[in-house]
Length: 40
Image 1: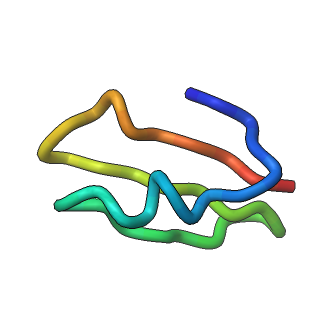
Image 2: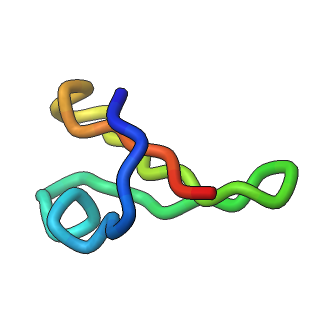
Image 3: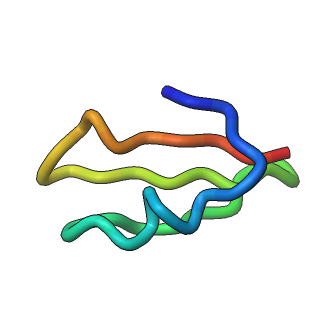
């Protein structure tokens, strides 16, 4: 997982979802779990 300033490139991948948990923004991807990220 990458901690990034911008999740836009991860969120564009097919199968990605942007999820808010505990004040942080996560990108999760069931199709291709390489594309995970956290912001904040």
